[in-house]
Image (tube, helix red, strand yellow):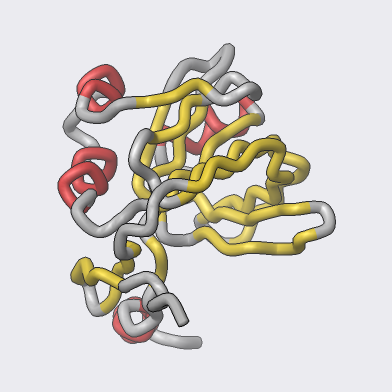
Length: 164
C-alpha cells in the first residue's frame, strides 16, 4: 500500500485546472473550489468530478443533480480561495463575484474561461470520494485570459496559445 503522504506529494506534481463548482436547487445553493475535474467524452459531452463525501457540497450536489463547472482564469486566485474557505457561508462566497443564470437553473461565473452547465447522470464511490459523471447541457466560453492551474501546491498562470 502507498503511504498517504507520499501519494499526496505525488499528486502535488500533477498540475490541474482550478475550477469553482456550483449547484443550486431544492437542496440550496452551494459552491466549492475543485481541481479533480476532467473530460470523459465529447459524444455526449461529459465531465467527471470527484467530491469528498465529508464535504458539505457532496450531499447538496447529489440532491440537486445539476451543477456548473466554472474554469478559472489567472487573476481569480482570490475567488478560488474564497470558495475553498470552509469558514465562509455560501451567501458571502457568492457575493464575491458576478453570476449569470444558465438555462438549467444553476449560475455561471462571469469572467470564467468556460462554464459547463451539467446534469449528474451517475455517481459511484471510491475511497473517501464520490465520482460524479455529468452530461454537459450548456456551455459558455469566456475570454482568452491565461488559465489558472494548481501545481506544487501553488497557483500558476497558463497562457493561451499564441495565434499562428
